[in-house]
Figure (cartoon, rainbow, N blue to C red):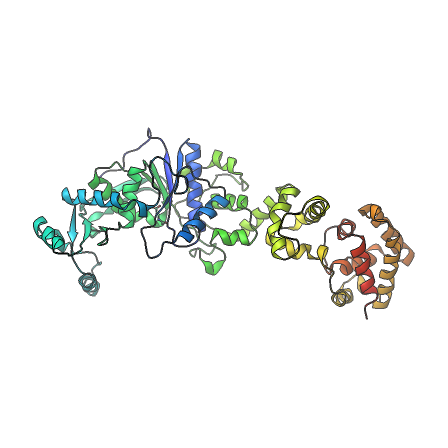
Length: 501
Ligand code: GLU
């Protein structure tokens, strides 16, 4: 068998073939992204297919999860189970008759045969092979059955599987990522294509669907590279022209172990809950296995569409570096307009009970935007927002603030009693400011005046005020912070610590 023919003139149609047997994995998302970029670059179509022939493990909930995950990332498909399209249905479980019909044709053409071997017999053969140091594979025993015998056994109620007759050839194809790959097919056993219940196996259903759905390029993870040889034999047996193939290196942790839950989030929903932005994840995934050939690390979707190239995809090196993702996330957070950042942060703030879950409006919204705007520089994930902004909504515990005053290097210059007196004086001075002049500049002037009156260096007063109002060593600039905390809360907090036992 020779290299697959180049389908350069065919319209580009690529697909993500998702198994709905779990949540939306970053690996699936990356494959979807690369396919989508490839389709958009070539004016082609991106198809979402649901590989749900594993009846035991496939669930509707998981299918929904995959769709939601990809959609949240902005990896929208042109055809799919929820959208339809010219070559649907797009769920394999709804295409069983098609697979059965093609399998019957293959038996008819003598490219496939019924196999009646029981699981026990197969297991015995497998063990024997292993014991004798041979690679276990199906012996091909049922190849020898005559069609008449096989038919008679089927009529008598036996339920065989269908196996493909593998041609023992030296095979090769040119992978768009990995280059030329060869395999000696005489090492393969005859694979099952249709199980005894009429459900197809993965490789077989995939081939039928690629053909029926006019897929021009199959771009997927490297874990499917060897399956491609079985699939090429199926194409050949069915008389279908194969698409082109490209296999991306699997995602690895920086220590080159396979990416797994053990080392952090692996599902898109987890990243969302951890406060990552879809823009950052897409940017990061693009760079996990594709090398732009420059130092550029920040890519918008349009930038990726312009720059992505299959021949710059690595065949062996796809590191998923979470620290890089975190860095990118901070970058994208800083790029957002404050209104948009506030909108995206809301579910996290509502989840922490800091704001009601219905979106605020009017002065409430303006205040929230001011608060988020103050923290924007420091935010690396949306998840961190509630912790950073809690003090804008809730008074800290005065006893805890007093403890902080005892250890802070500026506050420690003065005794707790001196500090309490100074805070009470600050409260008295600040009370003179009306609500309307409770803004950063008058606040600054008032507190600078108090420091001068006390004869203290400014930080010796400002730091205790900051700790008293926020119970945090680091906040956004103090006067803007006090402005957002508000007049009554600031005065209340200063007096609470000033009067604390
Ligand atoms: N359902 C398969 C998977 O999720 C698809 C593999 C393929 O793209 O052919 O691994």
